[in-house]
Length: 153
Image 1 (cartoon, helix red, strand yellow):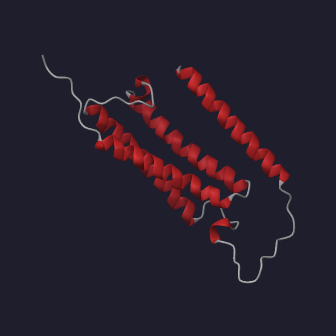
Image 2 (cartoon, one colour; image 1 turned 30 degrees about the horizontal axis):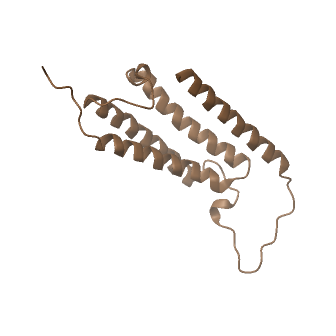
Image 3 (tube, one colour; image 1 turned 90 degrees about the horizontal axis):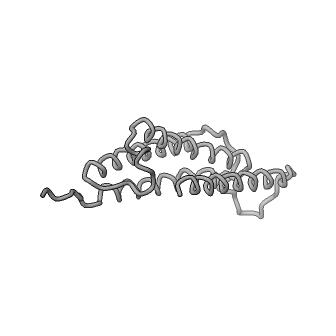
């Protein structure tokens, strides 16, 4: 079941990548469009440097929340709970689990870069914002779970 899940995940990532590449090719660089009087584009939708202050803070936030997820999962396991999203072989191996967390952070930065290169500057920011929100929810849930220890005979 685990290898099938990874296959499905990899297939979805490939489809997303192919769709974004074809969308980027379909966008032609044309003359800037003139907006009606009184309408200004939002600053997040304008072209900018990828490593600007906002993205740097967002990426740091993703890294901090991934670290919090690591700590909350370890705490949850120490209280007798089981991780349901990852196999025990990964979660019980400190280096492998830290690698998964670092890989999640790198994937978030990479997806943001893909959005940046294809001109989706609002989505570029929202990738990190959503990642922080989901990871923060998961960490809070891990800490909120009740301790579950097997009773002694």
